[in-house]
Image (cartoon, rainbow, N blue to C red; front, side, top):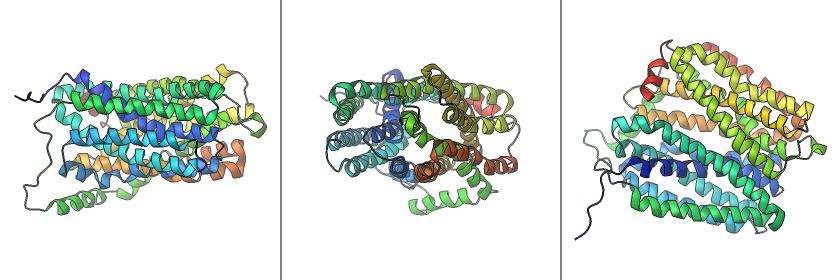
Length: 430
């Protein structure tokens, strides 16, 4: 007699591990790959362009999100995507020692990016199916915390391990070993979640019961989003608010790594892993928490300008670093902590604004479209940031990044927000 499948399981058994597994591949593809390619001798221009392309799956994931609903269960998509991510990690590991490593690793990173974006859709949907309303509210902060822990692990701990291994194994073998370890980790996730994820009765393919066909409803979702009032201004905000950060995020770590003879700070791989992946991520988390608290008290409209200014302060931090060229690791760590805190605080406004514009009948689908524009806002500037940096040098590049905040002033001044919005939203989330 077969054992009945568990409809409900203790959320502590699967929510933390699920969102840890969601955060790791994103951090590897978008953040750790920059450090690895820099250590393997790839130029800043190439790093910016190629890792920018890797954003594409997160940009276009709204296009296939209905497929996740209509075909198979969310549980199936989670399990299979974790297996594919594991295979992608193995492919990166095996490709690093080859003569054509750049092409091969990019192919596997793109496979991981596509799988990770699909995993995001399925995991977020499964979260709502596997928990009741009270549990969803309770575990919101927990899932966010474990996602951030995944970022710390990838961008901090793993980079430190790679730096230590570089001393004994050399650069290629060190990074090959790191990705081989990650392969084993994801196959463990695959096996663990195969057994531990519950089987909610509501987790089943969506069948259309209305007169409209699924295809017609699919296109209607997009039409309604783009028919919103002030849609051009909305899209402009989504694309421009993070323009400076989108350029900075690609060049910051190469700047920390490059020798002082070419304008960098000459940090070791281990130091970068600590300053950016540990100190930086902790400061980022604190900034985000404080941003949420103050927005809950006074609303998004009240804090929009301070948060917009805050998200552009990182450019000032890197201008300071590039001109003063401090040698103290503590000073550098402190300034990076300020940069990340300001980014976390300023990004709160962006997240709340996406919630603000998607209230309505198709809130979930429209939020996915908004996150697509968010990814596009990071992808396009990233494609060219490396080329611009190599043309201008580090000092002038960071000044350029600061100047690109100017269009954002006009966008922020023009958008209209209900003064009460943010207060009730944040209270509901708590």
